Amino acid sequence: MSDMAGDVAGDAASLQRQLAELRETVAGLGARLRTFEDQVAISQLVARYGPAVDSGSATAAAELWAEDGVFEVPPYAVWTGHDEIAGMVDGAGHQGLIMNGCAHVLTAPLVKVDGDEARAWNYALNIRWDAERDRFWIARASANSWWLRREPAGWRVAHRVNRGLDGSPEPRALFEASTQPFRAGSQPA
Image 1 (tube, rainbow, N blue to C red):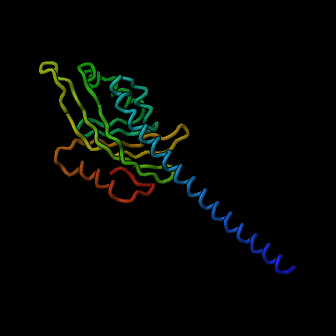
Image 2: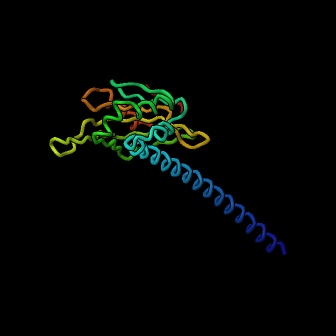
Image 3: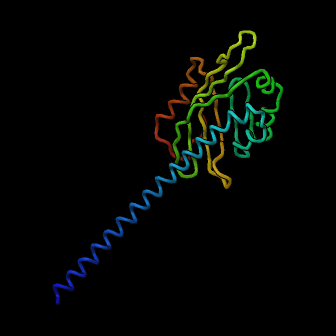
């Protein structure tokens, strides 16, 4: 009888270990799935920028940013908050670009998530139509660095820096940060 009791106790201990391993596995998969979902959501947020600004949808473009979000495009301007970002889209300069044929084409971003904060890096091309030559041309290629945060409505841009790839060190420095580990709390340089 004691052999049987020992077998039952051994089986119970084995089941407990298996259950603990299963819980650990499920928790790990859940964390990986959340990170994957965050990366996809951020990639979709970045992908919405070009169509929003090229369609002249000022509100849609501005709502990609947090209410206090910053969009920095040296040497042109720095816009802070929804009103200024929407004003950029509605402004004469941007409207002139899109009325003459322009595409803001962003590459797929490299995304790093840490909790409710994230960083992303990508290229942006400003492609313009030249009616006289019947062709498109690349007017600007730039490095982009994004600081994002999770808000109740989802991921939003806290700060985006767009620097022209003109050979100066600043755009390269934006990309250099993508090669380093990311931890929440990093701030724009």
